[in-house]
Amino acid sequence: MMSEMIKGKADMAKNKTKKDTALAKLITAAPAEALSELILNLAENDPEIRRKCFDYLKKNTAVSKMLKRQSEGEAILSIWAELLPDLEDLDAYGGGPYGVEDQVWELLYEITKRLTSKKVDETYRREILDSVIPFIKSGNSGAVDALDELAYAACYSAAELRYLAESLEAMHDEWQTRNARNIYRQIGDRDKYLELRLKYMEVGADYHDLAEFYWETGEKEKSIQIAQKGLKKATGRMDELRAFLAERAQEAGDRTTWNELQFDQATDRLTLDKYKKFKIACTAEEWKEYEPRLLKKMKDTGKTEQMKIHMDRKEYDSVVNLLSKCSYPQYNFVSDPHVSIAEKLEKQYPEKILKWYISGLGNLSSNHKREEYTRKAEVMAKVRHMLVNVMNDESRWEKLAAKVKNDNLRRPAFQQEFASIVPGWTAI
Image (cartoon, rainbow, N blue to C red):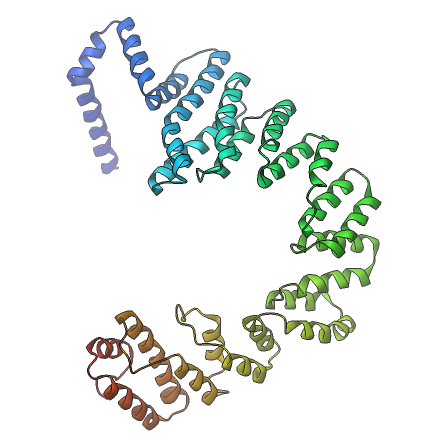
């Protein structure tokens, strides 16, 4: 309560100080005509001041809806004028300082937010759209995503969206052609959508897009045909297409086709999560059929995911054999999945895990930067942990540590890092 009273008194004192300044007294004494002229002159020469004037006066003055909409349009153009010099520099040089980029993005999103309120007249929206399109075409400013969103937000009607789509299509850019195609689909221009869609049918996502279009328009047989064609012809990005066909198979009660699609989905870049998800989806009988096929496919995936799957299956011999073929991580090994797996196998395979840890020490007989000594010391701490805490062989640890220490006596940075990280290093 007391703090609120103090704050209240401070605000009153601040307001009083504002009113007591010479500027405040001059404003009070000035005629309305002089104040209007002053504000207009300031706003004319500074887009930021102009925008702030619009926002303040709209909020604090009773005006017609028409004037409010006009003011919002001019406020948007003021923001554009405010960011334009920096955007031109970014476009000319392919980017710029982070602070400048952040400011441009912030102002572009401010315009987008105002446009999405649906309270801006067409005249202003067309002007801002025509101003944005050349920068989208250039694609060199580093702000293309923000510009794309702004352009889309400036279009309230199907006719305006068509104008944008035609402008994007005329750029003959793959990404912008995709955006144009999506707009044609949105406004229901079937012919233009299909014209652009059929020009580029390569990955699974392309076939899925077309199949989904035909499904939504009621041409379900054609939709299935396109999707099935995509399974045979498409190269990569198949997830959405398989999911689409799996949903159709499920609707038709076709369990066999559904299982095959789920199997292909799981084994495309197989991971532990995909393995577990597919296993859960199968009945016991189905798993007996698919398990050997899946394990055969597992050889095509990376060693890390193979180890994770073998760990889940409690096939620890396979895990440790794979681990022995992997290099010890050079960076961020605290969070490395290989190290995490090794830690879980320390008691079951102490000699093999110890050997793998020791491999992480690398060359201990040459000079390195201090950062590398730090890394080696962290690995040596794991070696000590294995010998002392897991294998209960302290004499073996002391023998190994003494040799490493004596071999590096003339490397003070080495000794300092090992002393700060490896327990008992100084006493060896």
